[in-house]
Image 1 (cartoon, rainbow, N blue to C red):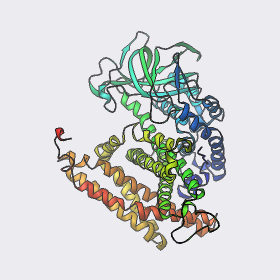
Image 2 (cartoon, rainbow, N blue to C red):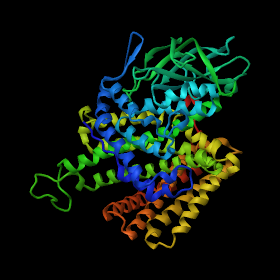
Image 3 (cartoon, one colour):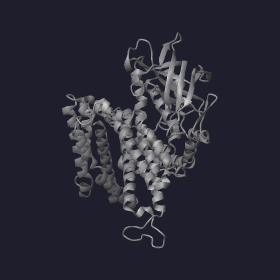
Image 4 (spheres, rainbow, N blue to C red):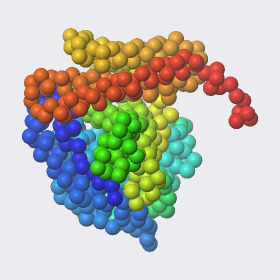
Amino acid sequence: MPAYTAPVRDIQFVLHDTLEVSQQDIPGYAELDPEITEAILDAAGKLASEVLAPLNLTGDQQGCRLENGIVRTPDGFKDAFDQVREGGWPALDCDPEYGGQGMPRVIGLAIGEIFTAANMAFSMYQGLTHGAYSAIHTHGTAEQKATYLPKMVSCDWTGTMNLTEPHAGTDLGLLRTRAEPQEDGSYAITGQKIFISAGDHDMAQNIIHLVLAKAPGGGEGTKGISLFIVPKFLVNADGSLGDRNAVTVGSIEHKMGIHGNATCVMNYDGAKGWLLGDLHKGMRAMFTMMNEARLGVGVQGYAVASAAYQNAAAYACDRLQGRAVTGAATPGAPADPLIVHPDIRRSLMDQKSFVEGARALSSWCAQLIDRSELGNDSDADGLVSLLTPVVKGFLTDRGFLTTIQAQQVFGGHGYIEEHGMSQFVRDARITMLYEGANGVQALDLVGRKLAADGGKPMMAFFELVKRTIKELEGDEDLKTGFLDPLKSASKDLQSATMFFVEHGMKNPNAALSGSYDFMHLFGHVTLGLMWTRMAAAARKALRDNTASLDFYESKLATGRYYMARQLPITATHLARIRTGSDTVMALAEDQF
């Protein structure tokens, strides 16, 4: 069975050496000294490795089951959820006014990575609740916040998001769920939703569904959509639970992975719901939850990859197979371990350099969110909005590939269920599909985000790269290995952006045909930027002799690998983008 150990040292490096969190002028960051964050990470890591990770295989094998209208989670899940709740983990970065601990988002993301890597399906119950909490916190009335948030912060009640219908996935303008206004100010919600993660389960007293529906007078398309709070059990005036609402589970979806999460078909039969936010402005409220979820899914992409990589690296060091091409590395043994072979090293370095770069990128985005929300910084908000489809799309694409590479290290044993590598692959696959399939993320990036605010966020990103290179150009040891590759990749990104500017309006297909390549090109540049910043931090630590030389030298070697072996792919992506749409759109429909 796979094991998992939280990468506390590496997360600490990102937080304190690279992002220098305790030195930032963001409210709450001054309290994030290394001792405090290490204690939090250690505690989360202990829970993850001792409680959550051992249940990962259980959840995969047992799955969830629907019995007489009640959804049962796998053995051990409820006890584990109680431990998560009792430890106060769901409340970590929530508003103290509603029982939260008020810590910055950057810490919440780090804990989310640890829990997700240990058991992705399990961690989704808490993660979805946090998203629903954020939507109500941002758009709810004072009464709605007082009614729902304290119980959601503690995860005594959990939350969901209900968007998709059998005939309407990404195109929400087609949804048919209806909301009829009632005399008491509530609405009667009628319709069916599918693919609802954590839609029902036996681990919480109540489940608060956020449901998109169309109320009368809203018009066609997404402009007529509103968002409603629809609890599983109605809540009495004194906060106690009342009657069961008219919402039921039709079935549990049979999925490729994340079997431990109850993905449900939800039926609403005149269920009582309350408007969240403004009437006919439901997409604005829902996007509060969706944007948070998209960043969270990006974390899932590299977190599952991190767990897979840990197990692949351990297997490569233990498994004896063949001899090193330069001569026996362990003459007294019948064979050498896999780790001696260059192609195994290549695979592991691909995995390691991606996971560590992705961790830095996601943490930086969390810091931008903190700067935006806690510091009211509109520039940070624009930048994280630009980066959201990149984090979601690029990190999940690459994360899935990384799990496959980790499985490959095991050879035939990777295909056998008892080794657990198949589960990492199957679980990671969903991250490319839900919260907006990755092709949609690419379209959003090129079709909306590039031109947002007159292109100001994109220009800010280019300026950030330029400034980083300028600040570090005096370090000759960084120049060849990091600064020159980053400068070249950034020029490829700028050229691709200019191609869209020049051709996008005249021929939209020319731009959108290259959108997926652009998302990946952008993703590689962001990881190149992160590796450059991490290399500078490691160089500084080596000069200051502040800690183990081995750790920082390993960090530099891993970064050099990424810059030399991965970053040059930006030139290929640019070449594809420049071909436009002629070859993509060449065939008639009946020729496929």
